[in-house]
Length: 260
Image 1: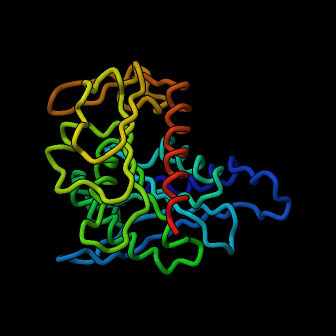
Image 2: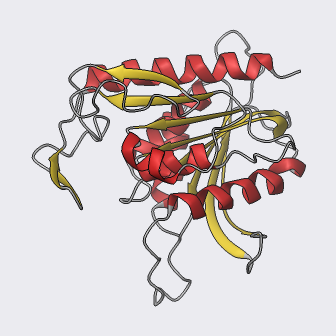
């Protein structure tokens, strides 16, 4: 399972106890594969790492989707931010390597990953560690677009909230089938996204002034992200990373509070 053992150890070492409750147990990490039933298709295997701050309680949960680089320090940090809020953090590797390492995962398709997250939402409804009414989905880059596309759109209860960090608004607008019904947040790199680029997408927009794609990639100094449009430099930005996490967790807390 790609990266999960390393990230599980990191989460256990870094996750603090919740303040104000001396009886709270140590956070617990569970790494596992899950088969989910895809609509109009075969079952699909995904890899998950679930960290809960209080075993034995049904808590709000936040699914974290990576971008093309897969699970790394960015997804681990977001999962830890959820843990510190008292929520379950679930890192998802939607296209894990095959058990024999022979099969190459397909290129990420945000619309396909969105459908996959809908199926995962349904599968998590019976997990006793999770409050089924308070499940949110967050993603980075194309994973962020998938998080927005995970809206059910058919009147059934779905995710409590959707959020995307540096999703590429033009790509999101071209792909989007319908605006999400639940609250949605787009956190944008102010140095790259033009004003008004995300208008009409049914989401709250938060611009991070001066930030570029992958501002939370702390070891990416000098790296470039290559797309069809060319290369984009990645500039790690710690203050922006902290500010974006505060915006994100505040948005999720408000969304969870609305669920009755």
